[in-house]
Amino acid sequence: MSAVIRRVRALFAGGFARNVTLLAGGAALSQLLPLMAAPLLTRLYTPADFGVLAIYTAWLSSLAVLMTARYDMAIVLPREDADAARLMVLSLALSFALSLVAIPPLWLAGDTLAAWAGEASLARLLPWLPLSLWLAGLMQAFTSWNNRHQRYRANAGGRLALGGSLVGVQLAAGFAGMGATGLVLGQVAGQAASTLVQAWQDMRGRFGWRRGVDRAGLAGVARRYREFPLINAPHAFVASLQDMLTVTLLTAASGSATVGLYGLLMRVLKLPAALVGQAVAQVAYRDLAAAHAAHEPLRPLLARLMAILFALALPPFVVIVLWGDALFAWVFGETWRQAGEYARMLAPYILFHFVASPLGMVPLVIGRQRTAFAFTVAGISLFLAALSIGFERFGDVGDAFALVSAVMTVYFSAYFVWLWKAVRR
Image 1: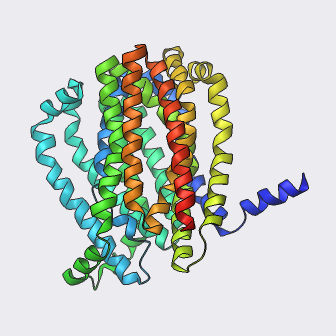
Image 2: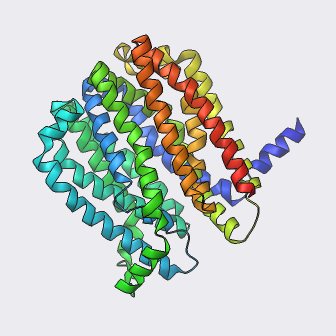
Image 3: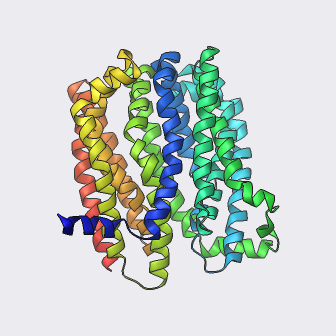
């Protein structure tokens, strides 16, 4: 037993664990507020309201990954701070420009886009999407900038501001009877608060790092890190399309109320990823990049990372599989019991997804983005195919989700094997 304890302590020892704990703590507080408010929110809003929010956030997630052309992901990589500053300016400029580009179609063709999504009430909410996209791009850029400078408290504070503002606005709007509009306004308010907190230190310094950045320097880093917009951006966009296509398929097959149930269960099941997975990814990315630059072996870091992630994911997985339906009914109300049943079916998929998400940083470090892109395309294709075949063959949402879990468990196992072999080379 003492040997096991020593190994566990060694696993979590060092600055890596401290930084993960700091970021996870901010994420925990950020998610704890919405989680505590959820039993009230699910009584103020209907599953259909949450379904509209799920469609909005799916569109936001899909488009947000393009807002900086993924240059934000390169900010932690350069040796020189001047190059990192150039990447930061490039990311911010692209985010602003692309949000302006999004205004005409989202403002003028909202009815057409809402009809395509299968939810007419979405049309009145799409004008908010360009603002959400701009804020998402700013959050991505400042997250990477703060990571580079090890300002993990700023990112943790941003997450806390996100959760607190989101809940406050959604509760107020819920009591005012604003329906799905209140849920979307809460999303926008949370993003704005998070951006302000993350950027506060730089705002106080009047963004001093931007001085000395010229067009020639911007063009230079744009060329040097061109794989991020050319490969990583399409990769991330295709990966994010899964959520958009899933909610579209669910809306067509079963209506926005089912999308609302799905949105809630994914929010709850992915809570460990929001609490810990993203924090692990942020710290691991920097550590992996530093080890790779120093020509140190990456397998020990990868092994430790996977062990930590599986150890953190298993307890909530077991709870959901055993008591998911009863737990959802007790916490969120009897109306949401079916969401708990769906959660039980999807729990294996979420377990492996939780472990795989932070590991997506590894191909960026070792320069294997093309193969990772191919894996992503295959994974999305398998997910949507399993969901469609499940609907067609069984005619039941729960059975379709069970098939998805079985197929994706095999897929993620193959992905882990590839990563293990890739870091050895």
